[in-house]
Image (cartoon, rainbow, N blue to C red; front, side, top):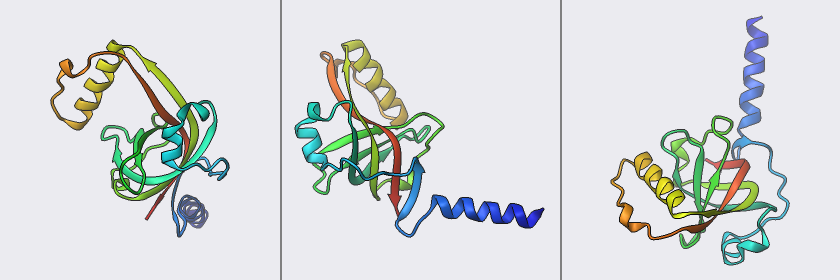
Length: 153
């Protein structure tokens, strides 16, 4: 029984890791690959579509690992990749590593109150103070609702 359990554990470990990186969530299809700059310069063209994007992990949710911020090589363009809580958990060690993500681009139209709640929550996660006077109105926010990712070693 122990040998079967050990074999199953090894297969599970090998299926989640590859020489390229560690897989989170669904396997990537590689379809509709788009540069992060192109995605953010023309986001409405991609809203509601599945996208495949490469970049560097700039930040990771400190509480639950439920999102990563992905940037391009120049660090100019950045997008949040949000995943379902407790279904995919990104490790803090992903920060600074290369990544490929897939998911649906969504556009969130936030009221001023929603922006206040979001910014206050982000400040709490980071353990930094939040100045509510910095929020003057609503915002349109684009993010990828992630279904899968590979974080490179």
